Length: 332
Image (tube, rainbow, N blue to C red):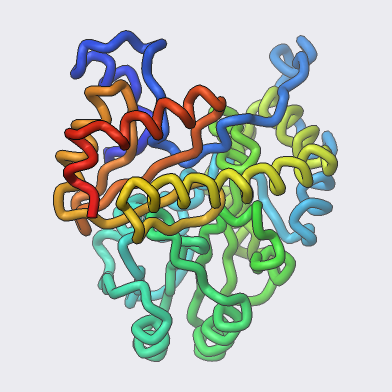
């Protein structure tokens, strides 16, 4: 399996720093999650049922009822290549590694993530897979541009698959409400914005026939009873969502400013993380780890992704570490 952020126990073992002494900035997950209430015993005792209100709550949140609840968007990422027709797959990069991994074995074209390069590739593509905003590079694609790419693909039976895992802080950019159009699939998750990655709940928004085929492929009870209860309540908590968006947008700007002040001025990303390329990214990752700070390292291109600190003390700890000589001499 591929490497992902959040492997805190491995870092604790590798560096000999106790687990509780780490500042984990490796995941891009909301550091202040939605406050989960007590879960009724019946949720653990009975098999989950699909008429419990979860789909209605999701339809209200995403602006469409053309959706299927799944065990995290990862379940869909792994399944879609077996359900979507098309021989020529285009995936701009760098991007979330599970997407090209899932489509291996096809005629897969990896291209630069620029709008111009994607636009030039559309007419020779059967399936375009995008992450918007992109993870890890933070690339953002305009909604109108996405709809035009979808129109060109769908006009000849092609597909546009969009992973919107990090779009909840800017929901007006989402294509969720367009779900149901032929050849359009939108993936959503409650792991990032709501900070509930452990619930493993996501949604596939797309045409009815595809959703039916995916449901059959995944089998019954794809989402656990406790996860259904928690997800439904989180999706209905509009006051918390509005407050979280305001807070996260401010924190994302703060993180970008902090990295810029430390000499890493090319950092960019959505509210939940900041990413920058650096020729000595692995050395920088290692030096931060010696301070008990875990960030996400990428080999190609050599780069680092920083998630948001949770507490004011965590922000100060990061600022202090970035100001140490061993790290400061890598800044530009």
